[in-house]
Image 1 (tube, rainbow, N blue to C red):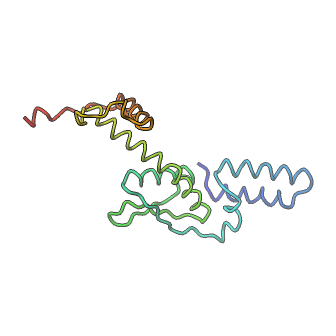
Image 2 (cartoon, one colour):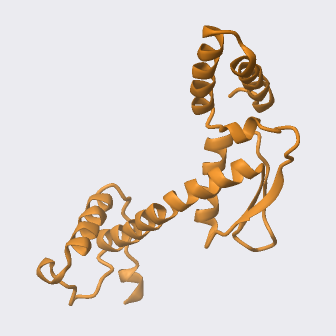
Length: 174
């Protein structure tokens, strides 16, 4: 992964050329700048006053350590491995030092991934219960389930196939 400061410096040079170049040079630099910004998951806001906008610590609410892990992985995927993360005591929340535009990008990404992560986590719990027969004997059948519940059950059953089996404690409980 490239050093963010080197990337920013290179992008600033291309930006200056796009702003003050001559003829086709200016147009080519603008096209290149757009491609490089996308490649490095950056915006013009990252370049505008980049040195004038220090990173500040922001906190992302996580309901548990698993959510904290997903948030930190999102930050690493967006901004590279040079990030330091913070925790408050026993709290699951995650602190990360970001610029305003990075904060916006991470917030948007977390808003998109959080519900999907919750669905996947729920499917994992259902799959685990299905794999080990941990459900009530009066379980509802497919005829009484909504299409959404049927889809969720189908995902759980598919996921259950790849889960390892846990030795049942039944013989110890008798």
